[in-house]
Length: 182
Image 1 (cartoon, rainbow, N blue to C red):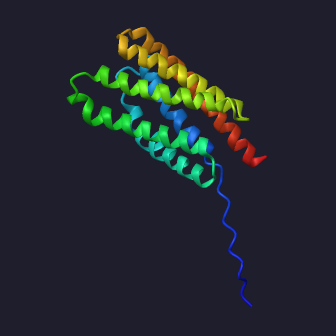
Image 2: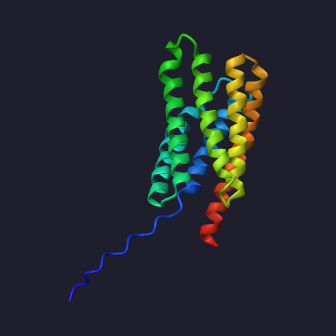
Image 3: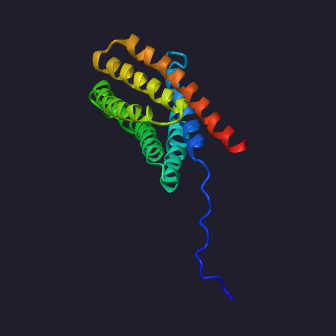
């Protein structure tokens, strides 16, 4: 006799470490450019499209499946951030009349969004993720101020804080993977 009970839905693996790792590498690469360590390099664009963009966006979709609204919102948004930033720089920045104004306003929007997510991260029971959002908020704020004011030191400092943000994100990814193999 055939069973009439619905088949158990397969468990979704934690997509958080993938999203954090994609975010970390892409953030490291662009932050190294911003900090002046990779002068004139566009290496970050490929990783912004695929690892920080597509892979992180996919992690966000899987977070929806896992019913994690915070992770879904964060990874989907930052995945789209990387895709949009790469496309802007690759296709439109050369045609823009004021790239600094474009970037300043885009960074302002992401600074506000990151501030909202940072405040919500204080309610997580995951301190490494909270510290990623604190560092990312500072990174965006510095980069935004640097673009609006034209003060290169703010932009450079934003790059250095971005490198710290990337390291924190890798640590949070490590903790997520470690929890799955314990």
